[in-house]
Length: 205
Image (cartoon, rainbow, N blue to C red):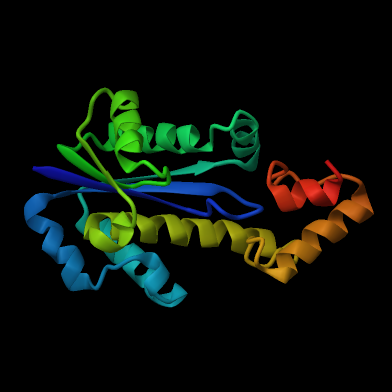
C-alpha cells in the first residue's frame, strides 16, 4: 500500500517560484518519518528542515519536486485560475509517483472540490484533500519540508544578486527592493509576480 503526501511552498510570495512536492512511501514505513521528527515545515528551523530533507529522501520510495515560474503564476492569476494551476501540478506529482492513496494540502476553500479536481487530472487517483494537511499527516509534512527547502534555495540564489528579502509582501525588505527596482528600471525583474496586488500598485496598474 503506497501512500503519497503533497504540499506546496511559496504560494503567497511576491517573487520566486511556487514549489510543489510529493513523496511516496509504503504505509508500513510511515512511522519512520514520525520517528525522524518530521512535522509541518513551518514548525521547524531552516537548519532542521535541511537535515530532514536529506533523511526524508533516503527513507521514502520516491519523491518528485516541481517548480512553477512567476510567468505561469501570472497567466493563471489573470484567468482567476491559481487553484487550478496548483491542482494541475499536484496531479502531475501524483501521476509521477502513482500511489494507492494521496493526501494533499488544499489551497481551495472547498477541499473536497480541490481533491476531485486533482483526481480527475491525474487519471482518477484516490485523493484525500484537507486544510492543514501538513500538520495532520506526516506524509504531507514530509512533502512540505521538501517544498520549503527547495523554495528557500531558490530565494537564496536570488539573494546572491539582489536584496530580495524573504519574498513575501509582509517583508519590508522585499517590498522596498521591488519598488526601487521598478522606479530605477521602469520594469519588473522576471522573477517577480506581476499579477500580485502590491506589485500592480507599484506599477500603477
